[in-house]
Image 1 (cartoon, rainbow, N blue to C red):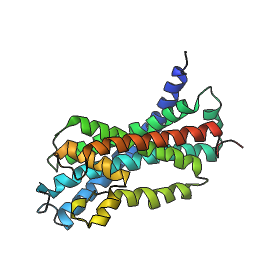
Image 2 (image 1 turned 90 degrees about the vertical axis):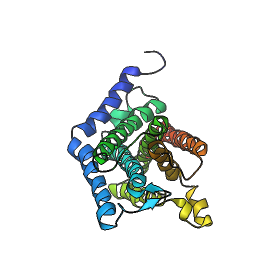
Image 3 (image 1 turned 45 degrees about the vertical axis):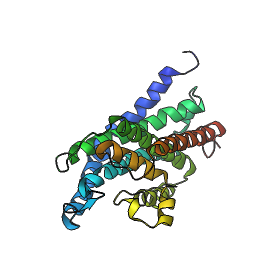
Image 4 (image 1 turned 30 degrees about the vertical axis):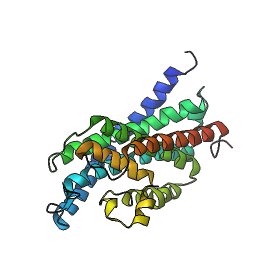
Length: 256
């Protein structure tokens, strides 16, 4: 149908969505429980209720960061596992053989992972609202950074799944790339309290901008430049999209 295989693209996207919805207790509800446990640890064990960051109650400062972390981890897990399982089972050919372009393959699979990330973020935010005052300071920043964060990690999961030869490689990306960047992005603290050299390093971390932007949208507090954050998020996603389409177009670790 025209220049785009709309029917095939919609089918591919639905396959990715139905894949995680069939086990929603694991893919949607489990991240909510995990995030609430993080919240409980900081609130009860570490005395977060009495603390403030930049004049903002610590729990309200922390909540947006935990939401973004949940979005990121689940978006990455969805696409990376989808590709890895297909490669191991040998049915990746069923995805590559239909008349899809590299951009269509990237879009269908990546948007499936991004959808899971966004749904997890919404579920986590609703659950947190029973324990932490949640507000909307700027809806546009919440939507933009939530969607762009989900897409960024979904594309990273797609790249990681294609590159990986076994599940250990996927776990390595999580352990040595995603988790360190998440924890060093100002999720649990304001980077303004760090030494200047460390602040400069933090501003090179794209995870900082997705957390900072969503935090601004929720509580109106930002540690960095909001305009630069919009550009960085868009630029990183364009770069990851280009790499993903190249992998599909070249058959990198997908075709014998």
